[in-house]
Length: 430
Image 1 (cartoon, rainbow, N blue to C red):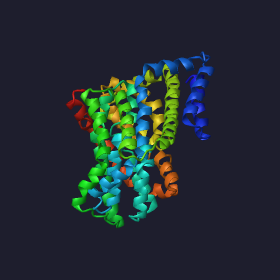
Image 2 (cartoon, rainbow, N blue to C red):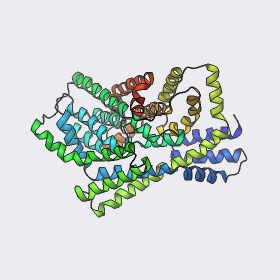
Image 3 (tube, helix red, strand yellow):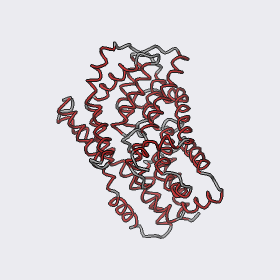
Image 4 (cartoon, rainbow, N blue to C red):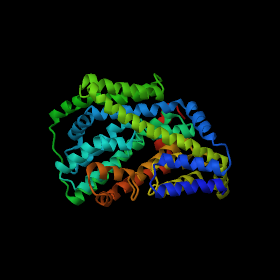
């Protein structure tokens, strides 16, 4: 390793120990790398500006964030809860099943696990604790695990970022996430059913069948957003970038004119929070461009490809090794770090082995989602502990069955790429 690379690694270690914001750690590490390597510091500006201006699809990220925040402010979560409760609430552990179903539906609107947990997730946690009398830790664990579905079922902010890094089609990635997202929901419901029987959790409220149409009618307009969004992308009416703007506009239309739960005065905090989240995400991406320059300049990706070729790994062996690598790292690192730092390193090897980049993107993103609920660092565990005011250890004690359920889906998707690639191939992306 060169002195510059040692300086970069040192900056990461120090920043992690001091718990500095990730974007600042990456930016400082990149700056230190250039300084120690005696390169022009002006490369910082050049790398960021060249990459950002070449990637117009970045506009989609703040638009998806805005659409999700508007939906949260417009009582969409309550309407979705009512519909899900009418459909699956009657079973043993019914409120847990409702939580998963709400997350699956809201996933098609938000694209962010944290947004899902902080929006409908809070509603679900409150209902499980107050009405269902679930232990606080279990309620939060179910909500956190359910929120991991959001970045898999389209639209998905992590998949947009992966498309930027890999050059894979966003349309293909969005299609590829549908079946895995449904499988994740099914696996979590199975884990809830086992837990409910073992712990003696009560069945949920039985909603008469005659009331199901009413619950559906209350949520029907909310359910039109994913139809408009994904239908427009796959029919070619608009691009994924334009779809993000359509999603934000449609969410504003529903919140302000149809539901009338979002007055003009309420727009200011929604836009302010969306701007804050967008700025944080964009700063992270900009810092990653600097880091990626260091990786490219040190020819780390080429060295990794040569090592993998020398090991003569099969594509399946490589994917299993990638899973183990990311599952272990997910215990200690945030998914955004793994996406922006390690995925660019692994992409050349995946290409060399002939691995489909759409399939690779879904598998690695699912790895990152599992990392969000894996102790000790799982971000969603911290989010739920803070929002629900529940001790972190109480959540950690309850989350293992859901980690195992999602791990089983990860293994199935890794062994059978056709599950992921079925829909992209059906729609002509392969």
